[in-house]
Image (cartoon, rainbow, N blue to C red):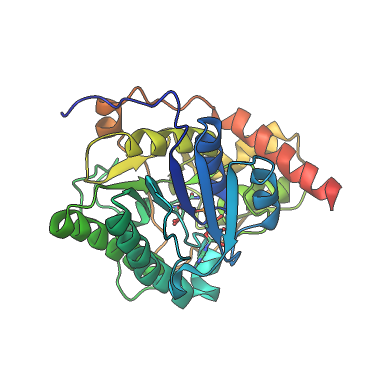
Length: 327
Ligand SMILES: NC(=O)c1ccc[n+]([C@@H]2O[C@H](COP(=O)([O-])OP(=O)(O)OC[C@H]3O[C@@H](n4cnc5c(N)ncnc54)[C@H](O)[C@@H]3O)[C@@H](O)[C@H]2O)c1
């Protein structure tokens, strides 16, 4: 393995561009760099992000923001040095796959291309946020980065899975053809504060149903598994990859694996809810198993998730309660 990650103690004087800054994961990435003293430029068109995340980040004078659709081109950064570029702008929820599939395909292709061209021009380091969905419904478990996946190119999830696979191909092409200093992370299911409460992913769904003592909707028989990572742990993993010197993809997430039924039961217990489980037909192409093999990441960095599932659920539920009481 190449040398270990050297994390910077300060990034004062450096500039980081974060595409998708108003989103859930990206807003936590922005915070890491603001804490390190970097200037952070956020871009977002708020298709799935939130203005309140940008307002929060804007309290730091090192944060600036431009509302822009990155498919249409990027702002003029003439005379501005950019050191790091984060390509994090993509809707990521199964609800979005149904409602805005073309926007997803375009941002992961044309949007990523625009960001890569900028990285080439500015000689910036570039990181693409890919996904565990590139593995599709995996035939090997847990998933290692060498596994090339089992994806249905014409199914209802293809707009996301295949456009992320294309984004990875584009990123590796800019590395090989133009020597752009690229990184790729494959993010596994992540949850935590600043998720949209109604975004259709399993954890916000279950928490909101449990908080209201409603039936918890489980698709399939509940034996399918997922590994859930708390968002601050994920942001740390991504930051470690940015400061590695390896261009091929890294899995990022938490390897603790739960069946969907276990996950619902834990949420009911932690929130002291009266909800009951209600089972419904499984959607097409829903993966049966999901768990990252983190050996590659852990070989180059000290990474280990620190927030356990029950703690993470409590923090996320508190965030949703606070949002509800402010609205
Ligand atoms: N959260 C997860 O579990 C997870 C898992 C795998 C991969 N990812 C990836 O991580 C990244 C962030 O995901 P998230 O869960 O925080 O989603 P999110 O929707 O909260 O964040 C994405 C942000 O990008 C913005 N955006 C989308 N299209 C845009 C465009 N054309 N121009 C400008 N801004 C645009 C959205 O408005 C949003 O603020 C995405 O690339 C996603 O695919 C997330």
